[in-house]
Length: 488
Image (cartoon, rainbow, N blue to C red; front, side, top):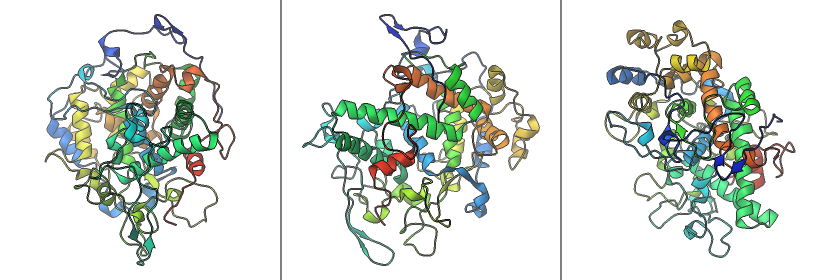
């Protein structure tokens, strides 16, 4: 993919100069490592928590439709759902408890650098966190071993280097423990550990150069493989070509709550209830157990008491089922993400935690309210975009609840983004409002980072082996690692 590139950000002893004529803001809203507002002048959306609980409780995919392929997004394989989660963990970490009555975004600390720098992978580096790296070669990450197990036919699956490195009580020794909260994102984190090690081995470079190569290829994937799939192509191209209209580009970036608490939570609607995880765990008759979302949460170091860790060898992922690799047979079953719409699978309404806060949709809606997020209509108007019509908002299974609480003309931003994707993007990708919030945030973070390729070397094109020279995707990354289907 070839897209116009912005001019690199120039650095002076005063900080960042204006980018494309934008003034660099200062003040508490723009302190690094903080959350803030993309639209601080807009009034907060208002509703009762009871109304939001009613709406959130209705946002469940009917159990009878859980395997309905018409609700699959055939343009976005399911691996991108969890790549989105991995990316989120790279740029945000908010520890503020939900029950706080009102939350000031400017007072919330983001315990991740708001940069696409893979600090969730590298931590503080081999000098400060040597336990993440091998003693014999500190340029490389430690890799964990699985424990021996059996398949559905009783055949032994031997131990292999396909788990995260772990402590004796099962906790993953990684830069961000959240990447061991479900098995797919844990295996994705492992793939990036192996990716770094493969770069070291194949190119013979030192740690810092390997980190730069890995990080720049990852940043390219985020833009041209991930965002290009889930956002409106016109918005995506416009932001890359002409820059951000609403997100200020600075060296001290903040994380906009319109992104973190609303638009980027599109991934929750993309989650499936079950997956074809590998030949042992899948929905077919020939399997040991179904690859349910519940089990994918259970087989991690953050589940139970760690007694299931190290990971059993029969739970290693089959990446061919999660990304669309070329050359597979016509009947080869790939997991696709679910459509981007206001429906979540039932398991996401039964999360562990405080009673009354177990429904993820309710959590999202309440958090948006307590953060004082504006309505979807107000954000659309601020962007100069025609808002969805009331009848478009109220269409579908939530019509009665939407009308009852007046949400058709004043809609919670998260719900609006999902509904806009359903109406304007046919559930395949975000609509114009959601796309602009998401793309501007990512592009703004990259342009504000003097070490990113988009800022320091905008003519960069991936150099590692790929199916299309000068381009790089998750399929290319996994092919480069060379471990697509360890279970066989």
